[in-house]
Length: 359
Image (cartoon, rainbow, N blue to C red):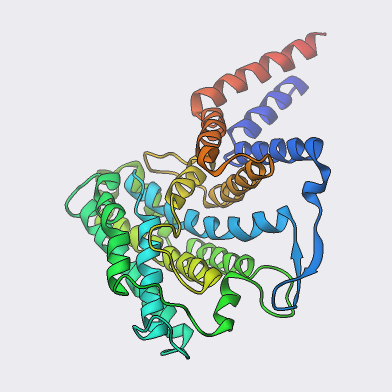
């Protein structure tokens, strides 16, 4: 094989790789911040309010808040791949699961003096609630054949009201300071706990995809539901299972969100986070119409989106205008990840290599 063909194949493989766009976005954001303010990458050791040593800096913030988004991106990727649609009720479901968790922890009392139940019990209840919400959405999509975005619109609309009803519209406060460890720092460990939670979730999904046929079946159902049924796969089960797994991811995110403040604000908690989760799937190069997926690209894209959010805050963009700025940047990145644009870039690289060879 000639050097020209090797170069063409290299660029073609590079551009077609799903990790290319999120990695390119990551590099661009890093360069922008490097030239604008090199201290963006500075990480320092300080003391938190409890007097414990913790790492601080923009990079730590990205890892912290990007981790909860990465957890949601795992479930959203499976839902998108299996159903060819997205769950827009994620933020509202976090409110429901978080409210149920507080109900168990505080025993229905707004200002308890001690925990009414162990944290693990409250978390398991939140997992059950999250799975039930996922089951509800999955049944509407898989059995009643409702388009995913329309089906999940029900909980998107009513979810926060349900969350407020669970605790009689009160805002319970968890009295145990140890509960804040899940969304903050464990004494003696300067790295945010959310990073370790995200790593645990990533390891679990990696093992599931490696030792089960979940990934294969999910892709088969997303590519062609009728063909997968002829090959002995039950599309209904796979779609419902994807939504249930997303429900589990939501419960973990709810634990982190509620733990950060040891209370809940039903109208604000996880507001618009479902949009970031969907964008992580899209930026990761996954087809929003279902089928083949790369969960690692989605996870990387989740951190890239948080990198973008933190960068916009660093540039003192107001919170009201943040969504508009982020939308413009993400649209550009998603357009670059489109197959048509990738093919065009591949042709350009081929012409460039040929010209270089002639010269």
